[in-house]
Image (cartoon, rainbow, N blue to C red):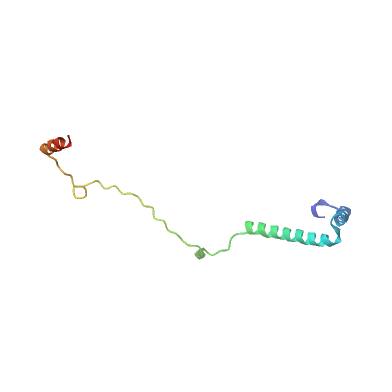
Length: 96
């Protein structure tokens, strides 16, 4: 028997449900419970079944990782200005 109930137990439960909900609402409730159980089973089977989707339906994204390459500064890329001591003295007097 389902859920461990015996025949007499099920009859008593159905009679009590009929008295509580009435003869009009009892079929509606049974239908709603049946739909809920089938939706639950369908959801569980979707979770446990393997996916049969084709890999080409997914968009493939290739990410290139940029690795910085250190290049030391050279006179061509970073020119260095040379300042004579006279130019330093001139700037010091102009700042004051």
